[in-house]
Length: 464
Image (cartoon, rainbow, N blue to C red; front, side, top):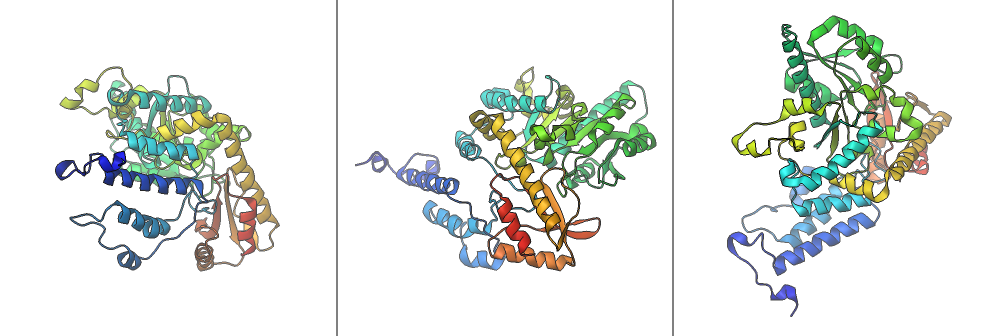
């Protein structure tokens, strides 16, 4: 008799937690499915209407349970195929995700290990490894050795945490200088700034003031200076973008950073998508001025090949974030001290060690492999842009800064783009969705997967 069959089947309160034949069989099924999903070609798939879910996957939650075999079968046969795979080479919409096999595999280890990543006391090893990655990124971005931060859930939480820190530090400075606090706080940004910045401002009950961009869609020091003069001490922070989601625009960071010689303001750089390109030697000068940032974010689940959901949040002076975010409670007194607690640097107290998959992948493959993969994506995007220029029915909406190719099909309206998009997904060729630029509908291909080819893009262009 095998060891598994020799185990008794637990009952009662411990049934879900004890090792048993039922549990061993479940683990084998889950690992087998995960192995197949990691090894074989990634399907594109597409969503189902609600009525189909109700028909094909009813009654999964009930008092007695349906068992792991049936539940996994329902996921594999109905639920998973109704989710578009963001790591498919044909996923060109929004900002895709292309996690390495090492990162995805280790994400399973992180989940299986039940690690708490909020404090040094609970997860010193995990925090140390995460901080190794953050230190690497800080060096790449030109921040001082004293910089630090945390991995938070995503760019929205990262932007919010950074702006909360900026307001706290600014309020403290004005108070120390004996100045009156403004009736309304202001965050300066541009119309191309990600919606999460405006959302963060609303959550904080501050005003997001958008200032004009130049003819390339970039926020510049000239426009920022005008706003700084107008709003004065009310300015909590200036938010610059290092790779906008829609078009991949990198703001004129150098001219904005130069203003810090004459004005005392917090510079936050939202690089959720595009800041990863700073690792590519060919792109580094696009980010001149980044070294002056007081805080910044980059999402490893985008162009640093980690699984959802991870945002690296970095501060030039992390003690300012600690003063803004450290939570106080009797049961938390034991965490006070000099240890590095990630929960002190963002709005999340309970957190998984979401930076570990990136740590494992970086440690496994080395930073050079990341630089090569990012450079490849940039080359692919710029080659696709050349194909658009050569196409008689297409025209670029703008030259790509990074790896987003935005273009128009001459004569098409929004409905034409949407019909084409729907057809490409129905035929399981690609998932590419329309967007808009300056009030006009456009198509955009976002290239962050090294397995996305020029040949696939050419196939799509030929159907337009």
